[in-house]
Image (cartoon, rainbow, N blue to C red; front, side, top):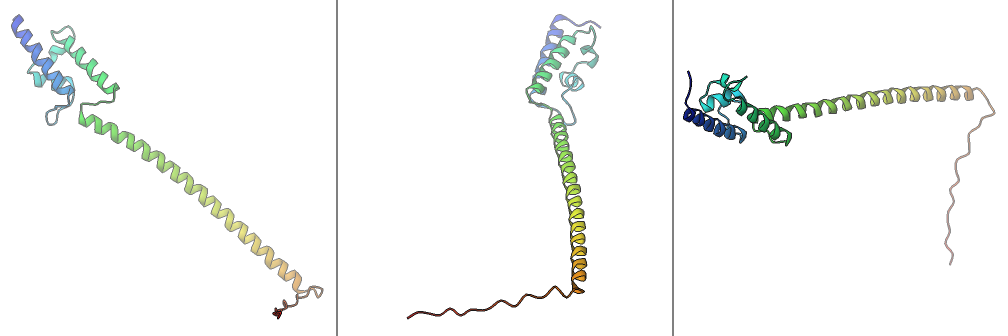
Length: 153
């Protein structure tokens, strides 16, 4: 069924208005910033946006403007913005977790080495005490003297 030029102009105006609303973030509940939602908001058949159909140039314009907003860091679809934010947060948390696991591994290795060194030092002290216990040449040092400091008059 053919449409008149006036109907086509009216449809294009509705589509452009719907494009502007979607790109401002005015999405219907459960809708996305996509061609399906655009077609439903403009009351136009979705297939009219593809191939050599009458509104394919408006689909191209919509996608170009949408990509420009995304590249500028402005995501009109709150759902997409949330997904992007959560992916970034997930990546950061995975990096923090990997760093924490690495630090724990390093500290565990350090603890193991420190305990091994302490055990070796204790064994050396015990061995030295046993070897000096049998020799008579080792004697005890005398107790330190206490001196009384006098006052001069």
